[in-house]
Image (cartoon, rainbow, N blue to C red; front, side, top):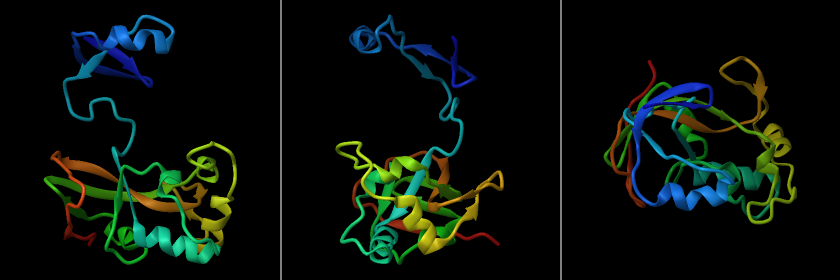
Length: 174
């Protein structure tokens, strides 16, 4: 079946079972669940985002705060055991993470949601200003200036990634 998803057409099949019925009251209308037949078949951009604990710790140090809660950045993967911003050096290259292989494609432009406490939603810290003071602004894919923090990646080889899996740099950009 075809279904519109964020302005694109996804090709998939209807998921049978009680899940759609359970989600209907939350959505406030009848819901049908469709599973895409192709991995990433409806994605609008990079399906993976990564940031290192080293980068978060350095940002906290530069901002003069004890800690930066990684949840502010809504990253898919938080890495440990790297130097600050080592993930930036992987842009254009590939990494293995667990059973998956990712091609790191770009820095991640941050938005105002990072200024909000992840538990309360209240604005409590000017994260964008802290990033810009520390790293400056950099152009995003369209050339617009952004506060960049973390990286985006495409999945070249899907696979299981588990807590504690090591990252292996397979190759770097030429």
